[in-house]
Image 1 (cartoon, rainbow, N blue to C red):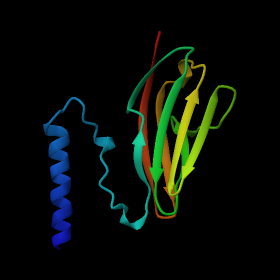
Image 2: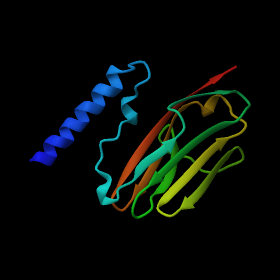
Image 3: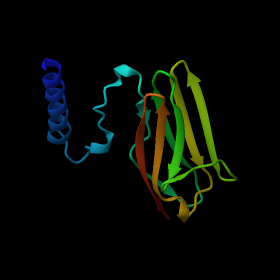
Image 4: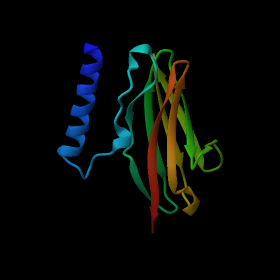
Length: 137
């Protein structure tokens, strides 16, 4: 019972801090209240949520996750899995129970705007980090 109260207190404090200190920069989708003590994936580092790119230039997104067992990362664009092709490159780097992934789109086009997701999955769960991209002329 006490641990449940402590978790609830911590959640309320995090919500207060993220909204109360600087409401303009808080992103509720970036908060993580998952108990990772069971080894489920955790997104430890990533690109900023909002990414603007210039048409014809490079778009780079980054996502890093850890867990036990080590998670696998899959990228999605507008709900469809991203596969490497002539202008899309996906790179992975592994260090122990941590995997890092870079998604690069070069050159970009109008169709590359929209929502991207980095999905980290292992046997104990999944974690999603979302990115919103838009183009500029």
